[in-house]
View (cartoon, rainbow, N blue to C red):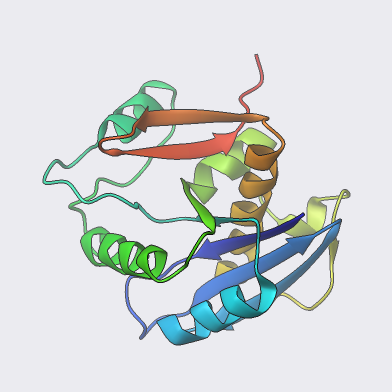
Amino acid sequence: MRLLGIELSATADHISGVAQLEDDKIRTFSVYKDPDILEIVERFRPDCIAINAPLHLTNKPYRNAEKEMVAMGFSPDPQNMGDMNAKTKRAINLKSQTDKIEIIECHTPSAKTILKVNDPKQLSQVRIMNILKNQQEKDAIFAALTALFYKEGNYSQFGDLEEGLIILPKLET
């Protein structure tokens, strides 16, 4: 299974991290522009992409997904805070340019909390194949791992289809 995780910045002026996960190997990239992200998608042809950005735009500060996450003790950013609106529009645009690839929304800070790991170097189940250059690459790994949990059916979802779903690794009960 080939999976991709994206830690998306709000604009092409800032670094976005991309992580490719295949088998137990992860390779990361730092990119700026959407065409660079799309080139990685085209070359790698993942089965699923998890992106740390909203994939639905609303006028509400908190969508149902974020409200549910807050009730569970997580801290998602409101959609109208800072650069979130620009990040959402960028994510929607990227999604519209990827054909036939399943794309899910994730929240990497919450994934780290659930997995009880803050640094991907602590993960014994995967081999990182390159030197991690920045926090965006590290966070992209957690997005890719969320895609893995999703594809394996071991995930929790928050929200609804109208305003968007946020996927996280399965919460321990």
